[in-house]
Amino acid sequence: MITKLAEYLSYPFVRYAVIVGALISLCSSLLGVTLVLKRFSFIGDGLSHVAFGAIAIASVLKLTNQMLLVLPVTVICAILLLRTGQNTRIKGDAAIAVVSVGAMAFGYLLMNIFSTSSNLAGDVCSTLFGSTSILTLSKKDVWLCLWLSTAVIVIFVMFYNKIFAVSFDENFARSAGTNAGFYNLLIAVIVAVIIVLAMNLVGSLLISALVIFPALSAMRLFGSYKKVTVFSAVFSVVCALLGMLISILAGTPTGSTIVAADIVAFAICCGVAALKVALNAQASAKAEQ
Image 1: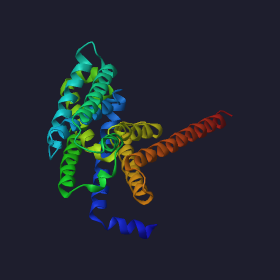
Image 2: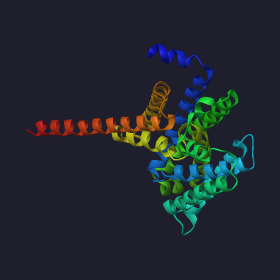
Image 3: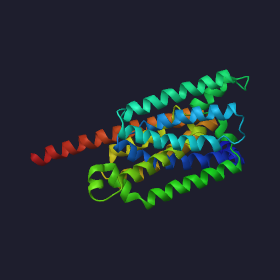
Image 4: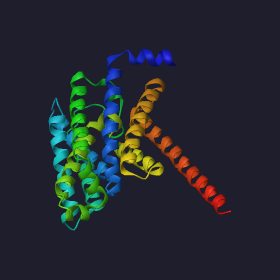
């Protein structure tokens, strides 16, 4: 198995896939903690479906570089979704549902009416659930992912304290003079970038798993924001790499395998947390005796 894995890793396209997968999972986990705390976890679903609709439009227009359309459209919708969720009668989850369902239906309708492929079902499934496209990345795609991922990480580190304040208590942050609206907008734009990058890795329907599971797993074991963020990042990268390596060796779908690894690791974290609670309770009982 090690020999086979070493042989696969000798190919540049496999190394490209591993690098991109690690970067995307790292960026997803950093923002995941914030989104879970703000109870806005499913913004990933809404934006991923917007990206699906944009991909459909790009396919109809026969654009050679779909990123030129998909990324701006997703960022704009992230901003509109944030504003709609805060300032109108359509709040949070309802706004996400409207955008998610509408973009998905519109995209699939366009792909059916203006079909440019003889394998429409295959194209739709690969976009929704991910495919081997992560293994067909060019050097240009890798550099684009590297630059965007670096920008996300730098922004997160630079504004860590502000993001922390907005995540835990937005009203208090506002009263302390923090421009919460700006940082919410910044978070939405960064999430949109991550969603677009993750489309090739796990598909639009599974993207939320990269955001939610690392954060939830870390929260089972740690109580501080910094520890949760660090563990979430390590957890996400390890699960992504493990899932990708298993998918390469076993020939399973990349996105689904990564999500399965996240779920198994989440179950282990829940078990460790339950064991920790039981041991603490037992220690307390002995101390009282």
